[in-house]
Image 1 (tube, rainbow, N blue to C red):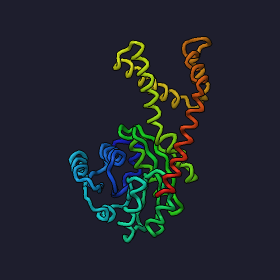
Image 2: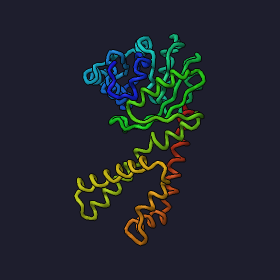
Image 3: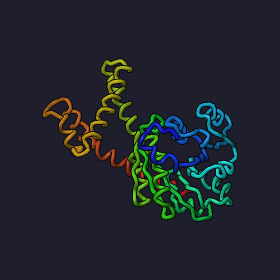
Image 4: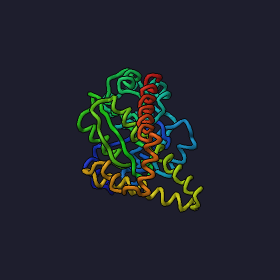
Length: 284
């Protein structure tokens, strides 16, 4: 296999065949990322109840497609369950009679624990929970990972290789922390979009053209994120203070944020997302 990304090349032979049950935006992003990085399309199979979505993905990525979930299981060495939490019981019911003992199961369903999925499948299997985010569509994603006790180190490396195609990965030791990952990386692109949207709206009201305001605001957010990432040893508070001259324009904006309890608003939003993740798991 001729991988374009050297970080993935060492693990490419171990990934083997990939099956996707569900091919919505996230699954499609992973599939396209893999194919774009040289993973053989012939080693990927996806199922979905929507034939039109399957046809489009088949044309664009040249992968195998089917409406039969059992066919995907039989095809794959690694099975990615990319369905909504409320659909997971039905999907697991369809495949639980198959032998899954030699397969790695990867779930991207928010809130659903590995224990709950094991219960649905009615067999002890290797399960990894993954929480990617939508920037994965441009290979700028962030994925949190958790493996149950059935997973080997080789299987963990295999899963990491898959998700490194679409961005960065981080492992957590406690499954409860996946709900935190969901809140700070899985859901947070929406927070950032709302932040940019609000800045752009006010800039337009203040006289800038919409295209100019959006270009400047998005580049500022991108640059700030890249700076925070490159200056990893510098506290975020220090990076903020470096921009904030006493009595300057930035200081005026920060003062306004603080008067309106901006920091607490963000913390409450993250807490709400964590709580909702737990609720989704309990409702499934």
